[in-house]
Image (cartoon, rainbow, N blue to C red; front, side):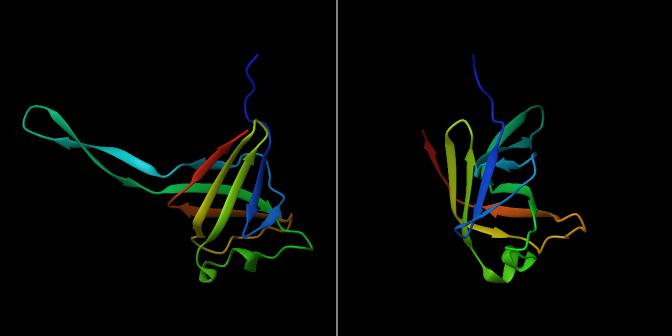
Length: 119
């Protein structure tokens, strides 16, 4: 029987963070673009940056300043329970997260390059 992703773990700048279920990511790569012509549609390509979204749980050992965009690029790792690890060496956050009183802080990263390591 095939297994699907059930648990995702996140490391940002070498530190592991607790995250809620629902982590999303899109790998960077080429994207097709439609180019409308007189009586048909043509195709061109362009670069499409990757993205990752996770709701991080802010605890006594973490802080919303850990995700300050002024810190620049850092390494984001996404590990799945089916053995895939994605390493994004030049990820960056776009804005500090909006922290809620239940400890939830949605964080968004932009991704440019990656390496996928499979078990």
